[in-house]
Each structure stands twice: as C-alpha cells, then as structure tokens.
Length: 159
Image (cartoon, rainbow, N blue to C red):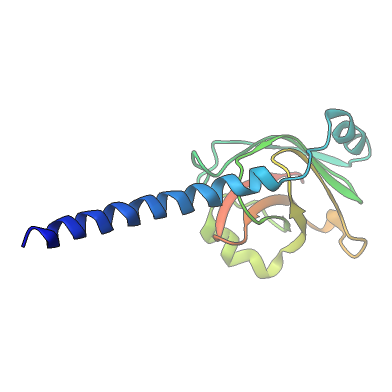
C-alpha cells in the first residue's frame, strides 16, 4: 500500500520538473538563438531617416514583468527601429495599428485593421524593414505582439 503514494509523489515531482524545464526553455531558447542585435550606431542611422518617434513604456495596462518593452521607436517609410529593450520571448511580430492599443483584448479586436510589418528577432535594439506595400503614414501606432502565445508585449503611438 505504501508504494502507491510514493509512486504518485514521484510522478508528480517529475511532471513538475518537466513543466518547469519546458517553460524555462520557451523563455530562454529565443535568447540563445537570437541573431546579434543591431548596434546603437545602426539604430541611430535608421532613426535619422525616420519621420516619427515614440516611446515603448513598461507601464502599459497589459505589460507585466515578463511582457514589456522600453526605449525609443523610430518609424520611417522603409524601417522601424528600437533603441531600447524588449522582454525576451518567442515569435514576436511587429504590427502597425490605426489606433493606439495597450491590451490584448484591444489588439485582438483591432487586428483585422492592422498590418503586420515583420518579425522582431532581437531584444536589445531592433531594426525591422518595412515592406514597400506598407504606408506607415496610414497608421498611428506600433505594437509588438507574441504570435505563438497571443500575448501583448508593448506599444507606442507615433502619430
């Protein structure tokens, strides 16, 4: 009879460690596989060609300890650059929105009106090229969204 509680405890402990390991891997893997971040000089060069600037802030409503961004975002006709940092995570996408949003619910509600610019692959600074078909002047805000987990990361209003 003592074997059943011991087996259950052993099984539970192994499942807990497996879950913790998987969760840690999801968080750490993007950091380990990220390409080198653009230098401050590269970001500054992109910023010089930008038409607008805005701020990513940590204090947005749906930002939290694991989902945040901070720094200056420069929005130009051919690139969007961040001089700052993002919380590391998988599958980040950069969107342009007609209005500023700071919650997952608002993002999901307005997603059909947004345009996806590209992937964000670095967490200390980034430069994302803007495809020629996208007119940044038709939008008002830039948003970083985790596509895999449907998680709001950060946003900034540039117009």
